[in-house]
Amino acid sequence: MGDIGDMFREMRDERRALRFKYGISCPQCRVVRPKAAPSILLPQQRCKVDGYRDPRPRLTDEQRKAAMEERSTY
Image 1 (tube, helix red, strand yellow):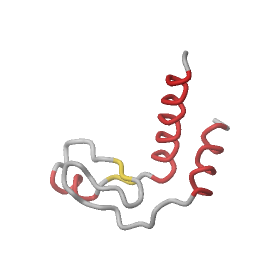
Image 2 (cartoon, rainbow, N blue to C red):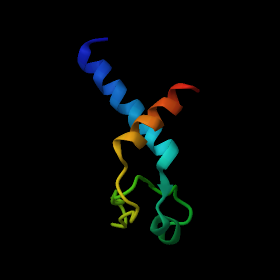
Image 3 (cartoon, rainbow, N blue to C red):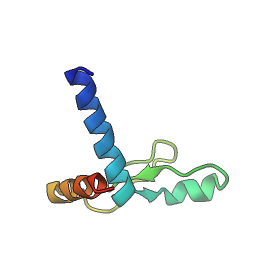
């Protein structure tokens, strides 16, 4: 695949690793729509459906690197 395709694949893999390690289910989604799958939020991310913002502090670069390293060991 070309350079652009490889770049997007790396971005997608990073997003998946971060959501796997640091993602939480939106508590507002679970209350308002109990039968639907809740949105998975990273720290400081806003839910597109309910507008809830995760109050945890933003991830540091070290946390992002650690998530990618853990994901690559699977």
